Amino acid sequence: MSKKRIAVLTSGGDCPGLNAVLRGIFCSAEELGWEVLGFRDGFEGMLSEGGDFMILNRENTAGIMQVGGTILGTTNKGHFTSKVAGGDKMEIPDEIISKASKTCRDLDLSAIIVIGGDGSMNTALQLYRAGFPIIGVPKTIDNDLEATAMTFGFDSAVACVTDALDRLHTTAASHKRMIVVQVMGRHAGWIALWGGIAGAADIILIPEIPFSLEKVAEAVQHRDLAGLKSTMIVVAEGARTQHGQQFRKQSSGGEWRLGGVGEMLGHEIAARTGKETRVCVLGHLQRGGDPTTLDRILGTSFGVKAVQLALEEKFGMMVSYQNYEVSEVPIADAIHRLKKIPSGSQLVEIARAVGISFGD
Ligand code: F6P
Image (cartoon, rainbow, N blue to C red; front, side, top):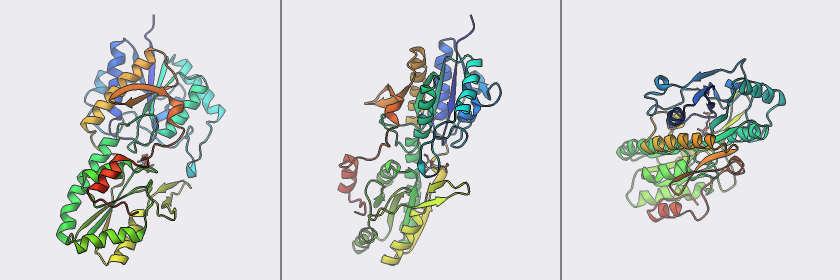
């Protein structure tokens, strides 16, 4: 009898911990005597004649746990893209589904594990509904996926922000400056809130709490009057003003990306306070580098759980992390809406209790 064969792919923006999941999948599937192939560059690997993939083995999965990125490659563009300019959802064209379906049939795949964020889970759900044996694994530094308390990659991104703030505090204090640090997170403020608290920011601006420039300026002036001459502002890229204004940049392909709020803030608050100001956009530093211990544990656990779901043929389900346990939920539950910081969040209250302003 031929060996049971499953596939895995990494889709959307990369993040630390992806390789830990791949290793977890390979090691636990090997225990079951299964073969694991990894499609290259996300769903795109299903499209070339015969499929573009590598067979995972002991050699190519050795030593990858601690390495950022993904050995399979990934893309947040391509033929399956579920998000188009402006964030609208797109249906996968029928001919793309037929091509992918032929590849998976020819390769005799018993399960396809899709590791991705909400756009990729939307694609995964469409494929599941078209008859593919899909299992989802949630991934994103933004931590904005519904139906899981945490995604791997988030903790590593927060660690990067914390480290950056630790470094920026010393230079800000030496020059008595204000520094505005813009962080990622799309429309959710998780990275800004966690990183800001851990890195002892003075002001944290998140999409969930619209800010006023006047209130931010007041907070800076209060600090100055109290003799605290340097101020650290962490602003999420998706933060919006009380007038609802959000800051975006258009790329050459007509797509837009969030960005620009840090520069605007630096300019406006400096003008209102007279404070010497610098702006630091952390950008893709937050996505690169080694996964933290937590992301290695989460990644390994998610990989093992995905193989268990394949064994139980629980297709259309996504691995989920709730109450310190790894379980599963329907993929459909994960993509209805983004998980944002809830109003009345305990962590926001804790931040306020230690004097952090949200500019509201
Ligand atoms: O979703 C992860 C993320 O890093 C967001 O925080 C950010 O807005 C976006 O991806 C950046 O995308 P790209 O890598 O395509 O510039």
